[in-house]
Length: 303
Image (cartoon, rainbow, N blue to C red):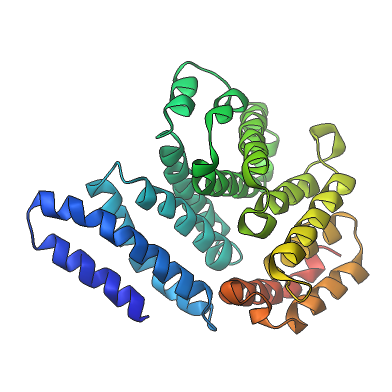
């Protein structure tokens, strides 16, 4: 929590000067955000993240408006809103989560459009599959969180059964699906190990929710989940476990194939694994356990 105080101190100090001084101070604040996030990810209490995010989001919104060309702040906005919605909102208030995912997506797209080639391609009416070719490794943060936010937003949108019987709505969702897949595909090409195989994890969730006729299915999903495990072992060692991926596996894959035994086994593994098996992601692993307990309470909905 000390690092959050440092951030506030920087903001107060920069606010006390003229506009030029404030803008020059924005660059100094960026590594502090990074340092604070790193410290938070190692924390033993994941709920501290949830309690701190709303206030931080307000500050970040203000900073982004004040320094609209600061790509770091805008990209961080995409990550912050998306991770907060996934970790602390979606399970209890999906409609609010849908709004937060949309904010995260819009932040991410704004950051991606700072890539001139990507922006110009979209302005010319090119599909995302073409525009995404302009994105480079330096765009990876914004690319991943944009795709993640957009995919999560679409997942919640498809829960509206009335909307699914609305042909224009279906066509719009299919179009957005293609856009999302284009961004996810580019993230795989640039760095499929990002966020411990995060691109593969979201691909797996996508494949788990759509039938083979729409490019999904259990076989494709399983291959993507296997790839996540392979990446985790390479990056974190044999004892490393990325529990948020296991949560996705239980929620999307095990329920897709209606394998109650696999569901129970995966749930138990998550609950039994120490959070700090990946020290730098202990808070995320702890958060996965909270989400897993909520999923377990909802088991009757799936089996």
